[in-house]
Length: 194
Image (cartoon, rainbow, N blue to C red; front, side, top):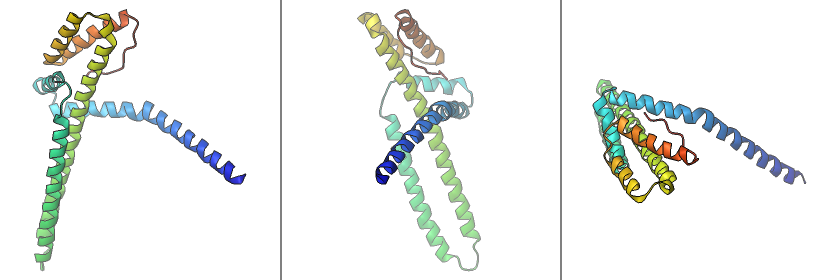
């Protein structure tokens, strides 16, 4: 009987912790991550309209394999850098007898390289995440409104999406979908356009 009570306690404790974790994610961490991504995007584009527009041009291309290829390439570069750094560092360490100065310099350069790669990865992931979220939002609104628009209008919306060149183009298209969804009493998913 005692083992049974212990198992029930742990099941209840697990459910309680899961509920708390879900609340923390939904109301604290998720908005914080969304805010952080927008800050990172502002930093990476330097607030320059040309760079911001490039992100919307990438959105207009829809889902593609670029994120996967980019991340694989970046991870490969990181691994090569680590292997080279470890090998050179080990050889340098063995050769230094009187002075540790060369090894200290190498260590600093290697740390700077690693930090640079980490920063590039963070910026790239933020950009890719926003692009995928924006494409997903469009696709979701398109699916929600499809029953309420004819085939020709659907083709026009897909064409408009493929021609997006800046934030205004994207916002205007999303606003059209939201108006159709509201007119027909449909739920509109939340998404903040950057």
